[in-house]
Length: 232
Image 1: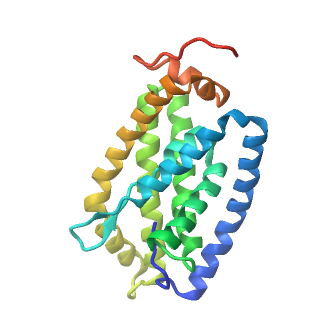
Image 2: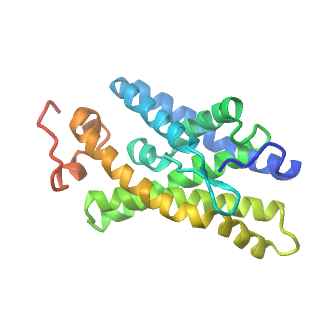
Image 3: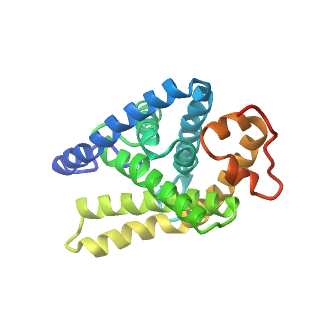
């Protein structure tokens, strides 16, 4: 999700930027609407962005010579829906490129697609499906945040494989997946557990905000997580 500056051919970088742009524009409108309609959730919105920034900035060396990162986007996608995370993820990636040299500006579009578009939509879709199947809330959150992580890295592997096929795109994608897999598989599982813990914490610290986002029923149903009664 942090494809380095200049690592993509110009045409590939431009194409991914075109793909990412409408999601970011839509995300900016969705975030503005969220702040306008629920101003009390501003702190929680900022916390979702900070959570993504901190987690995705954690650089863990891989035994394959690359590095792996958590993503943090599944948490925000369940809270505020994927469009908002498209904007928050883009802001995160811009600051990381400028301040931490994680990723780049020419590759920003590709990184936005993997981290801020694909990951959040997979997380939200997984959460909704798990909820429809009446799975426990903790299971729904674990699956959503873990799959957001894996789908982000799958997308990055596809982007790199398309840009550097070495004669065989499928084989190249497989090689890039192999680079990430050794550390990313357990890392995604750990992120899934962290997502569950974060929602349990919010159930105690921000019950009214969760109610306003429509998450009170799911949290109330979870054993050991009871939201205190308050004003509707």
